[in-house]
Length: 223
Image (cartoon, rainbow, N blue to C red):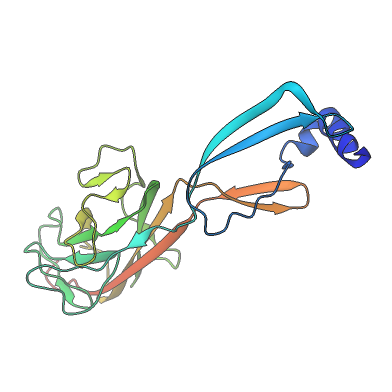
């Protein structure tokens, strides 16, 4: 009990140093759904103090975002999961070549996503390869669950299932400055879950995340 009192004494007089210190570290691996935590204060004899209780409702989510395969007619010739690329006719082009044209303003590469999470937060697209810098180039802005984007809601891609068509989440044209080479697109997804870890007195948080990739060739001959 003396250690307990000492901790709270230090907490209140050194709030900046201990504001991230947890009272309890609950290892809830594998648990999901709704829970109720109750905090009770007691005296030195462990007798509950009247009126000194509080309840906290929370939802546990220990699942990462789900990535789904693509299907449709014509079906993809190569397996792809989470993200893929198609041409303007809706044909899958993973590991296939896109041919540039003189109209640089017209999108040639259409990016589709097929993923979901009960507590989806946001996704980001990047392109790598060719004469792009090693860190890649971001495609458009990050898309959040509350952005008014067609085909995306609070659980990710609307209608996402294995063997589904997914939804278009981006497009681009690599004319005129991207060289003939292989390129890849990275889809990074995060959910809204608060994943916690304790180190010493500090409680650190981050979100579940998952990446998916698709590659293709680019030929700028007609740019």
